[in-house]
Length: 259
Image (cartoon, rainbow, N blue to C red; front, side):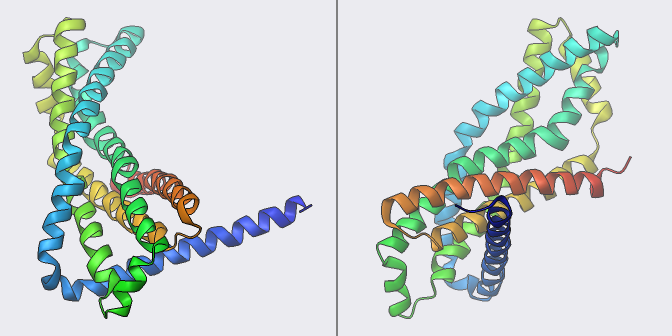
């Protein structure tokens, strides 16, 4: 039986190895960009498959994110005696800076990151990736680059929709459930809106998309052990992506939003 120290050391080594592998996959992706002109069709295919098809799910989630944000903010305002005319400001700031980028990215990781890993993992265990290499086709250029670029561009695209839909959801709850007029809510939102907050949210979303794509491809390419291995790699992909999203979100908070 392993001692606690041995187990801790082994897991530490595995963690460092995995982070190194993810970094290597990122460098291989960056190196493949010089052949981007050969993969335009594949890139547009992945933009539609990974991004556009995720839009309905993002819309549904964003409606309830905005609605819950407005309701909880109103509850806290009444608890501390703050005027409800600031409700639009509170909801807008929370959605644009934090909720839309982070929650959209985590949902995207669960849907798209898992899908990328499952697809590439199946190709790995059935030796389809080996077949591509034997035919002289660069699997990173053919499989990784289109998927990572699609994630990089589509997460910010989806966050724009998430911002809009969440604000609408917050507006509806404010008018119907909290008795705040639409004019008051929207005035509060407009008065607090800063283009810098929106741009920072887009930067975060792009980095989150890059994380999801690279981690998903790394786990897929390193899948072993048949169907069971595909399932394990898919789980690892979602977990690692979600953790890295939260870690980088904290880093961005320290860098972009100084107190």
